[in-house]
Length: 310
Ligand code: ZN
Image (tube, rainbow, N blue to C red; front, side, top):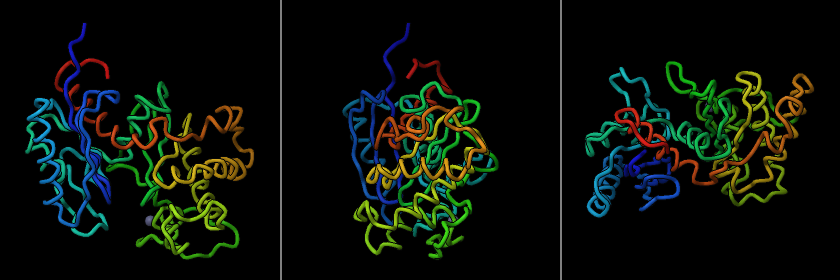
């Protein structure tokens, strides 16, 4: 027998906006608001704390908090900078103690991870990867990120993986230099919303479906999937993020280009089933990111007290 589910707080800290909410489950989000991620971290964090406190005065205290943040972040719990956003290119946010600031404000168990890892956990729990122990979640938005679940757990080494920055074979005939400040033509430099806007001269969401810009984007993403398929043999790949949500036809191109790139080395359709069920959009849609923060909060709560199943 289980009691009522505890009230949880969630913060999805993105590069341009931050979604804060409280609730007990994906079906019971009681309050939610989006605030801009401004250039002054202290102002943004104060705004988050203030909002959650207003809700606490109405709904009661939260039992745990989850923070799913843009990165890179320090996830090494023994590190002196654990919970910090580290070497980001976002002005003002380098080495900001996000998790510490929010954990001190609420004094509750606090889960902290990257936004893409959070979304992967949420998709595994409630979305397109339920009951799968091996899958990958890709987000293509302002940047490109990957959360990898292998043997039922997220992959970590000295830090979280940064597969958005792998270098890939270029599409034949494409010599556009790329937009990554560090690597130029890594995947993020070729396929992120930032890269698409730089190449097209207009925001990615306004680039028409028939634009030639999408072919090298799909090619770079298929190349990244080629690497992921061979590295961790995921049973499903979820392709989310703002760019793929606004251009769902990208998925079909990526499926075709992945099969071409693998060139029969793996009989992927035999192993993993139809491509339409292998490379899929998030089951949670645009909620995958925020619900990642909810999943992190639930795990933080569960780590300190026996909790009902979420
Ligand atoms: Zn890069």
